[in-house]
Length: 287
Length: 251
Image (cartoon, rainbow over all chains, first blue to last red; front, side, top):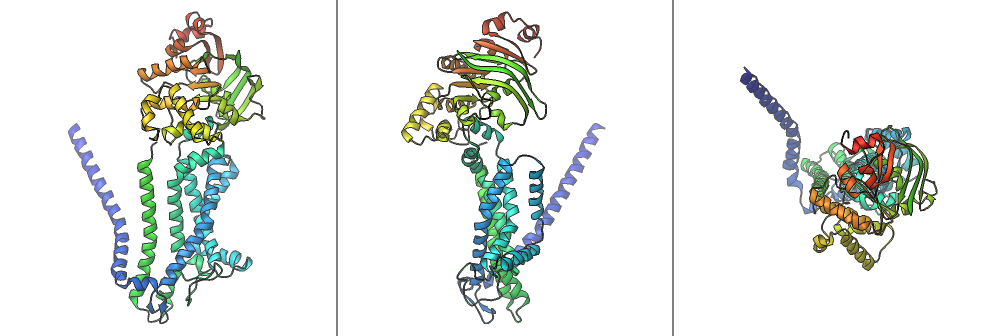
């Protein structure tokens, strides 16, 4: 009797695990399929010339260099604004802010900011940076818009990374006569850094791949030359993909797939970097 | 000489856990004062008042006066960072900072603004000698503070405090996570250190309290039940509750 219950429980468990494994596998298939399909279709288009020359013939031939450079500029510009601000805000919320209603409100606001559709950020950027502050459609305006979109991600991951540092370190550091700032600078921040860097990369990765926020604020359909200053507009990979997929008749399909592949590599490369940093830091961690 | 004079100290946390009520206590310099009693009696809270480490905790109410060399350290004007440099603390679990052995010991001095490599070297060596750890780690000072055994880690934590040349050393159950050999090392160390320092020790058992106490204070549920010199306390306790606890009838 007892033996039977035991074995039937095992059968149920085995069945359950198999089902879970199957479902997990199902979720992975579309991702692998998508990446595989794009690599298969896009890889033939990619060569040195494709990556390093200007588009020609109404973008139907030549390379996509200005879009790649533009996305690099925008990502860099976003990093310049959002990284210091985001880390500072994360440190403040985790280490300084009192645990009261005001802080809770700020935290809720930040979480909600992360949920706002990106096109809303685009329109906000248009209103504030392009028109009101008169930056025009420019790398500056687009970077600032992307920064606002990226900030919540960086703030929350910084906060979380710092909270993950054991409180006993703070107590010990304080007991040895360190000020609060010294404790943060010497102990908490370095220990949280891997998590913070991961958050930065994930945030910037999203910024690099977004179309809507730069649509009204800095992205250009076509430019005959590279932007010369932060106040120039720029081409960018996501918007370029939109343009060549929908706005240019007679576009060779392999250029479209090639461009998508480049963006995908850019984004997945950042992802991979984040993963490596995280796993290395985890292996080195002593506590 | 009295190092601390505590007058009518009361502490209450926001969650009403382990509080202190009306503590009056004088702590002698260059002696080991033992605070003992069952868990939750207020020993840790008391220690964390003396170096104002309680500032980090969620304290709802604190009343009374604590004179350290004649100055009330509960005063809002107190330079708490300077205070903590004078009153070092060793915790129940050894918690090396996530730094090298060398940097763990040099930490307090660096935070105090000491940059001279020669001075730091000397201080680190001296502190590790005093805590009888030097011979075991001198050839791997750059290894992580976590690369050594638990007993060694606790002596590292003591060295870290000694490097600041404090006036007082407080130890909150410093041997609770250590084996008997490591424990006896720490105990004999403390007996030597009391020549130079005022030591306040909260042992994790009565036996250690009896072994170490020059003076002893029995804490029970936030109150100071009895205070006397060590011999009297453990041979002829006056209060019934102290007798029961020392005899092992509860706790």
